Length: 286
Image (tube, rainbow, N blue to C red; front, side):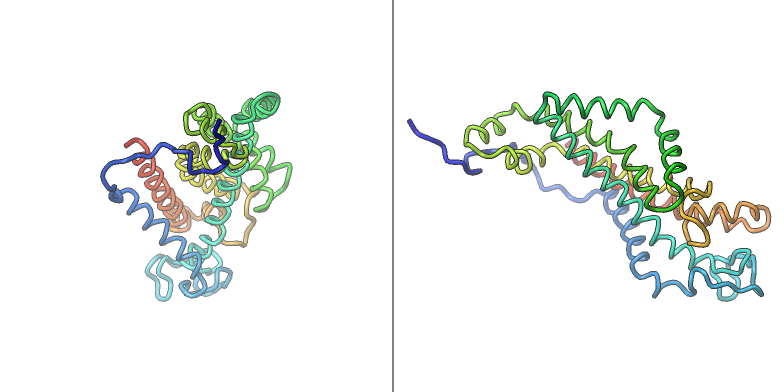
């Protein structure tokens, strides 16, 4: 009787063939938009003409195109363009961290629930049901108000609410693939469970989660901006798109750019991330 060695060489995973796929225009445009904002965030001190908190009482509420102020100034004389540029250093990292940490936690719990099963699956599902029993916005608002204003409070509240989606996605995919031939072959080869999970199962089950991360980052940016607008997110005078919109609300009739410019920045980032997500979804369907 022959014994199979515990090696990955005997495990053949499904491979998708076909012609070489060229990057879609959605991926190219979305990556260009998001990449531009990332570069702006990295090089903000070199790009911004002024500091985000520098005031000029002699040049308050200057319209776009004013000398030295391409996008005008606010009621304190702070340069609107500089504040928009520095706001990318707050909104983008927090949104990315919120989505990626939620994805990490949800993926780990979904893997455990789907592959181990039994009481682990039951506990994860019951906790997920408990979280989803509350409307997502209501629960998120309650947690942020309970934890207090600030980036850390927002991150904790967002992860508590958001991990459920990833856990259910990964669990469902693992339940689908764990009985397939290549997983059974890995078990027959004597590979340890952790290697089967991370090397053979996980790469074939996280496709939908990767696509959802793009949409999740959009939701995180919108949620952070909304909470900052309400005064429980990033507190003034820090430059943050939602807080900037709230500060400019009272001057909407005479200084429209104070609310329109942050809104356009949010819309552009959301567009870029949505295009990337759509392109990844289209590629998965082929």
